[in-house]
Image (cartoon, one colour):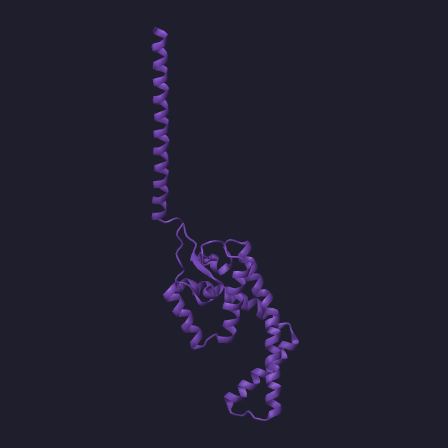
Length: 216
């Protein structure tokens, strides 16, 4: 069956739904971790002071803020990665609709050759092409341009190129597919009918020959 690649709008809607769900879950978990909240407050106050023009630039303060940011990032990744892995890699491998966002938009990830995507391809697509690049390059011109370029020229996103996958529209059989199926059914029916007629003619000829022998 022919598969249609997902449009950019469909990709965005499925991504938005899944991203919001994952953000809510990870945000709730991180809100109960005091160390993360403490370092988050330090980094947030730093940016507020910069915006207000009241930040005092000294080496000790900068080191403290950098250490807090790295610590906050390490805690965030250590809790988010297992959640993302279970939701975007393990769940799609065992559940056909794959994720809630893709199920709502009727999309599905398959391998580039049209077969079921394995754990390795899903991990490359979601963790390297999705989570890592989104956190490192998210919002940058390079990330947006590459995503747009690959989607427009190949019908596959940057994450699909990295994982060797395709995001397709999960649809019912089209009219072309139905006509192809009907054509194959008609062909099989004609061949079967021709075979039955041939066999019946052979049987009748044998019966006639036997009756001729009975007369003599």
